[in-house]
Length: 560
Image (cartoon, rainbow, N blue to C red; front, top):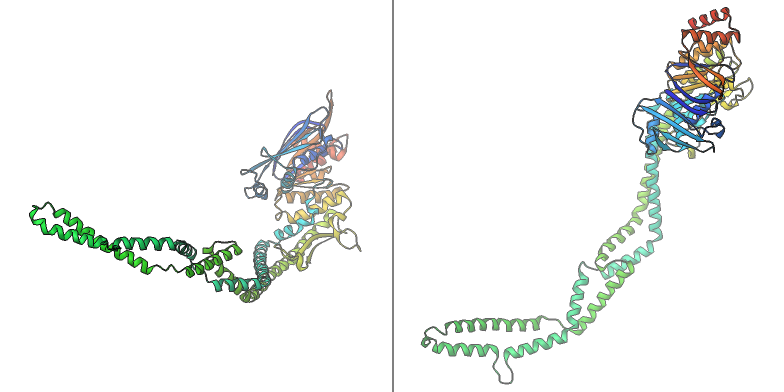
């Protein structure tokens, strides 16, 4: 609820601090005293359009702050979180600063926000009926949610929303599959040619490195053969020279013949020569084996180069490495297989989408049926309120219209609108057809009486709700305001003593003249002052004892 309103330098108000209470709060005062200024000031804090003329003459800027006490789960907090504004818990303070140039700044709990966000927050906190700009119930966009809340249809709404998301997910999956299938079919010829090329070449993992190494070997084959031949010649001996093996054997034999006469001095030499002989024999055998094993046919070099260059050319064609050709082959083969399998997959996804659509439609039909039932109950409830408010000729109806499939959504398949016909024979139309501000305010009151528990807006303001009425009708208006105030905070700007007498709290708005010019002030009335104010409303300028007695009767009857 609205707990405090602080106003600085707005028109005739230089400084004003108001504290509000729950229940029905009545604001009274003579015409021109400044009640509309209070609404203009509150409108600034709620994000409504700013006019530089609201800044008090001689002041640099106008500042208005409105503090609200809220439940922690109020939608305003979720809205702030959605926009990255840390709001804390419990209270919200909306502040607007307006300069003489018409520019303004907005704050929520001292954090700067856009005017648009301030307006959205304000709409969630206060609803004003009458001649004021903000009349949320006139916006058809709110009617569906209000009807759903009135009919306690949240479980059906959630089921419909969930099934809608399931249907959309199935539709998206089908769309993706169809797009992939279409692309695969467009590329089918290319895929077949690419797969055939890869299968014909049949690349193997690590093949490029092996071929490159073998190519390097073959490219040096002449030098290798020459070196190995010369080494073999040196080891075996040529032109009558003894080879290494024979020379070592001869040296060992010579030393062994005299070793026993050398007192062991030749033993180490003989052992070393024997080891050298063993290594030389092994080395010679390995050289001969290498010569025998090495394939250094020049024709083989041509074959290896042809395959290596073919692999590299294909890799360049596909923009990958040679070692990636095997994986590419698998991917392209899978895509080619998808052309054949894609039609079956699409057919399956089409069936799943149709099943999801059927589930959504089933849920939406249940929700639609609940809305039709709730609309009937709402219509009956509002209609019962019209006659006592002198709106007996008006007809109220809640239209639940089935939408075309293109307009279906997570909120269902219905368009909901509150409709009214103010005179017999006139077809029902939007609530804005009600021309009179007073009639419109009373009509909104009838709606709010029925919707009080369904609407999350915690503060209602009624302006001109008693315009052009009196007596029993005014009493009926007051009684309904009091009923609504049992659910939410209600502020009523009224000229009706019957309405004012039913208020749980009473403020008087007055204007006084001084050296600094006219000023608007607001006083909280005690019981005596309240009786005097209601007597003034009954009698006019001159308050009589009869008027005071009548005021006392109204207060007593109204529970004041």
